[in-house]
Image (cartoon, rainbow, N blue to C red; front, side, top):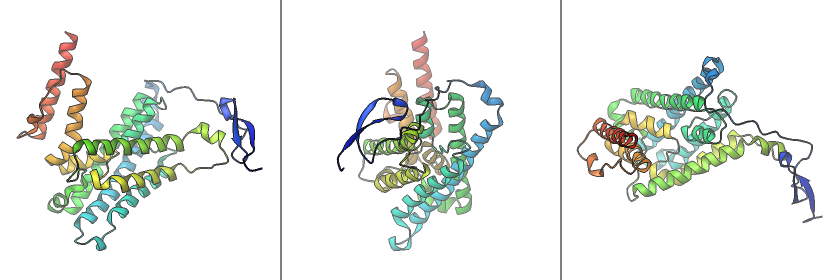
Length: 304
């Protein structure tokens, strides 16, 4: 019987496909694609479940930063490799926390804990723009508070001395290499999230039961193993932003926030040109103002 094939109907798709016996899809379950989420859903603003979901995202991101950044700082403070959990321990901390927090919050907010995941689901029309923006704001606030609590525990000198858990491009790598590693790592994560939470797949391939937080947590773990030596592994804008704000040092901003912010302005319109030399000798606030002024001037030109 090995290698023999049979015709099957694939769930909601309802078309014939040849598959080997033993991997055939179930035909007794169907799936109806839900309608796309509306772009704006004002009714959500009057619903308690909307705010409860935002609070869940805040708490989850807060706990995520608290555990993971403390792990990173513990490794940084250790004088020897044998006296710490090392890179593998950091990766397990990130992956394990994502597994636990997604499991805890999936029934409340969907367990995003990551603006990149939220943005991907927004593009897929899985949630409204109203909810997506609210989630992203709460995630970033939770990350900032989590990093702030760590700084309060550790003290300013200790916190600053070990880098504050902020993501920076490692010596020997270019910013382009770091950006490429972050793009691929974030793709792996978001791709896993979509695959593990695909209701159509669950209806079609019911012979492969999956606990969604498990593959998501493992994806985070594996990406961290691969990219910690390059950038410290961001793949979560809230995690990178929260640590960078509390740490507040030039190289952290240059490597993970300011350059991406500036170049996003540059890519969005060719008239928003700001030479890289404007970074030199200017404070963070002055850099932000320069970018904003350039972008506003560009928009005014386009509308004039």
